[in-house]
Length: 299
Image 1 (cartoon, rainbow, N blue to C red):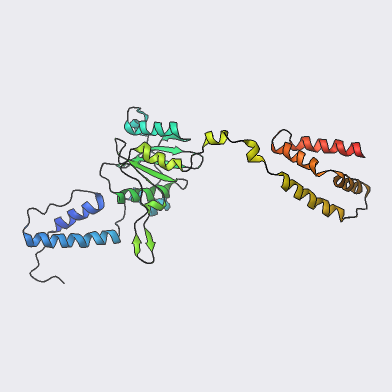
Image 2 (image 1 turned 60 degrees about the horizontal axis):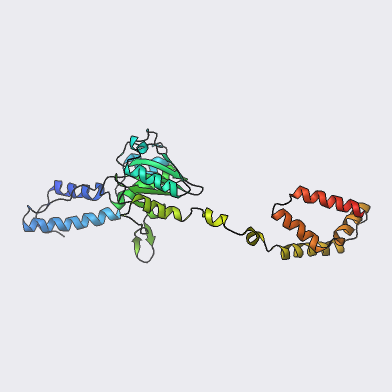
């Protein structure tokens, strides 16, 4: 416990350090303090840092996930930024490059008037990534807090990509990467590491590569290899059906004729029908018509 002789730390110094921790403001300068007060302030700062990490302050209302879920904050409706249509803008140029390389469609995003500028939404068959421009030097904690709010606003959002106005120092956060995790053995653990400090087109491209279809590889596949190998399956199914039919004793004449027809067809005939349907050289209706003609010819 602090003694009576411990120097009193000015309140404005504590408030300045809290702003530094929570909002990314300038760190207090202790150069002008005497040694005792400087040491006391450093000790207090360490305590504040531990408390802020353990109990993060509430985010602004417009980025508070609880407020968003309760409907107190609506989805952004502001007009897209003019820079999103400027091809010379570094972020717009980087997004255009990503759009060219990957199977995504990027459109200017609605804005919310905060310093975290929503710039683009990039969608593919399986991804929906929000591109956000942040002030240079924005902390990872601030990005994570903003990402949690973004995920609360849009349930189909798969990631949020953060970058600076010049398209550098970029980081892509998924839902898991924007949350802290509780390890039963060691307590609170940091979220998974993400690549940062990279140009936007590289950081976002690395993320999209995981789910982007390889159309060139698909077009180069030998369809006979992909669709082949059904002969044994067809034979197994046909033999199973024939065994069931052989054990039956139908009384109606048309059922007797149908039973005799199926038992009289070779397995190769069924394989041929299955192959043609699989390779799309014949439709199911075509095969049905052929079977009906063959049945009438044998009757």
